[in-house]
Amino acid sequence: MASSCFLGSIVFTCPTNLSSRPASLFPKNLTCCPYSSAASRFESLSIGSSRRKVSEVMSMATTASEMGKEEKKRVEIFDLEENLAVDLAKFTAHLSDKYCKERGAFTVVVSGGSLIKSLRKLVESPYADSIDWSRWHFFWVDERVVPKHHDDSNYKLAYDAFLSKVPIPPGNVYAINESLSAEAAADDYETCLKHLVKTNILRVSESTGFPKFDLMLLGMGPDGHVASLFPGHSLCNESQKWVTFITDSPKPPSERITFTFPVINSSAHIALVVCGSGKAEAVQAALKKTGEVPAGSVSAEDELVWFLDKPACSKL
Image (cartoon, rainbow, N blue to C red):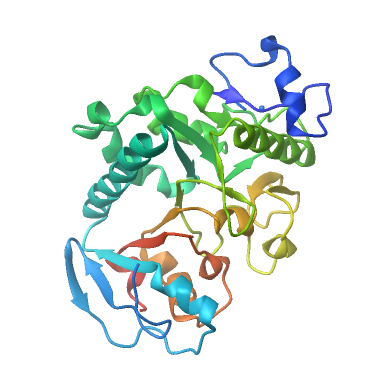
């Protein structure tokens, strides 16, 4: 289980109220309930571990700010999803080691969907025994407002395939309180994050003032959505909230909570993992800017890495 962020029957108006929350409300086993040189081109796309030079992948003019974002982006392409999973595990384990040593904690955010399957190598040797799981703090970039045992629950998906296989302390796993309404669950999760900032578990970006997670592991839908930020939806333009809610999701279930783009893009590192030919058009739209898809708006403060298999990049 996890540690659940939740309001229960109490309304918290600021993070300091969390410290007065009765201990009984926190069950120990529950829930808190780079590198292209210009924006017109990626210097390298990778197939497996070997890189090859690629000429123009993008041909649009960009601002100086966009140039900076492109310089922190790289695209890795793999012949097989199996090879992608191997490199994703190495990437994640390296960052885990770095942040556990530097700050004594590693804040990791995941999405649902096929992303969780691609994390399977982390629960195998050598990572299962070498990663310092006790220092991990585990979050979700979005969640469906359904019971934790429901098949649509991102918590259930991550628990069954990942969390149940590694010794992350239950109190370091922050699931939503699904007993609340979508709006209240989003507010409660944001309150939880602010409490973790206050206790120095979670950093704040000096440039944006939003929480700065060490690593976000994101998937992308065939329509180019990330988290629960869908094409054309007004939530893509939310600029103030850390966590918000949606009750009209074009993909069921309709009620969800989601991190906003300012939070996503304040992350130190992001891995955007996309596999399958069914997502090739959205990958093309995001990377070549041939269309407006939410995934094309993802950036990171230190490094954004696209992990793609060959079918996913077939239209690049």
